[in-house]
Image (cartoon, rainbow, N blue to C red; front, side):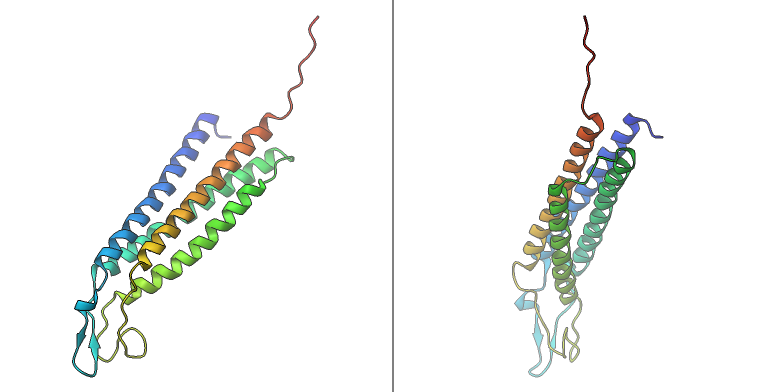
Length: 184
């Protein structure tokens, strides 16, 4: 069995890691918005279009990886805490607020992933006649990466809140009611 100090250290370290990865993903989304292809980058030969690959492609991939890792680490931490507490204390249940925040985390994560994958793939090279879809070139709409960045913050914030509420409720459940002997 792990000592309480070691357990607290691993929890704090895991929280720092997943929050840091989330903030890195947020920053990469903002950088992708700045570096995405612009209308002036579009080449048109009268019939076919061409877009060169932009730096937003690599930044978007990095943002996706960081967000994915943050979500996995955060959820592993959350379920490790809640499951291990549940085995030790039969009265412990995952708080409703933690469940709600976890649901919000997964919903915002899913939408952010879809936005990031779509926007990032549009910033890949779009050759003449190939384009992004049906031989046509597409540009990422302004604000798509910003929207993804906001969803990344929502994902990390709700996961962080869920983890903290689980830890707080677990500590309260472990303490349980105190019975004091009457002195006299």
